[in-house]
Image 1 (cartoon, rainbow, N blue to C red):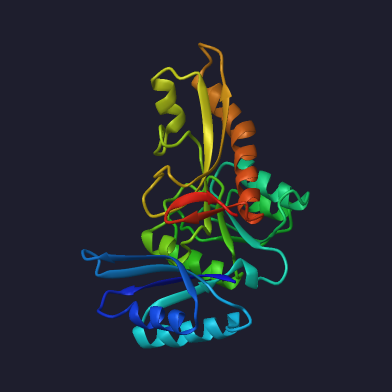
Image 2 (cartoon, rainbow, N blue to C red):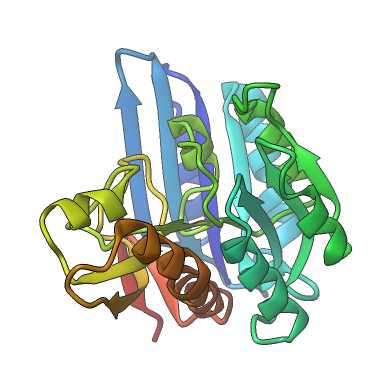
Length: 286
């Protein structure tokens, strides 16, 4: 049984020791470990992927042990394992304005192309509330009147609905590092509306158009704290246009046709456990 453990909290000495000692004491094989010490923020973050013998150590015992260690160290410790889920994986679909990409995920789940369930839709705006209602999915707006997201409220919603994977379906806000660490290990899936690593940032269509590209695309990738880093690609999809095609038409085609298919296939690959994130790189599962 593979278990992902994340820890986040105020920096101090000896924070990782009790976690590692528990894992090794239970005979776990540590497949991945990463630790981050952000001096300027006085923040400690840790990711550990460990493989347990379920006959020797049960999942509930691991969760309880990490709870006790969290209370002692003052760390926010999360334990997650797709193998421990009874039933289908649970997705939180997050969007802002563009309806095509979240609709594609919701429809693929309804059609059982993605074998998961969507217990909540999250947005920093209210525009997509009607889409959530159409698919009978609870809608939570975590943004203020100007669309500024309450990141702590987002984490609370993810915990409330016991979410396995966070799907950023054109969610037009950058997640803070604290959220990325808490759901690290391949739990946050993003749709970037450009081809990475060539066209990162917020205006990839415009950037590609400025250099006279005739091929455009979208990238589904795992989120890590480095924005659009490009080494975490799950799926990419492209489309070509004729010379002289207006930028407005290119964007419309990309948003309505290319991006939804790219994201839905990427989410399917993750949910079906065809790929995983290992040391910030996507690898095929054996």
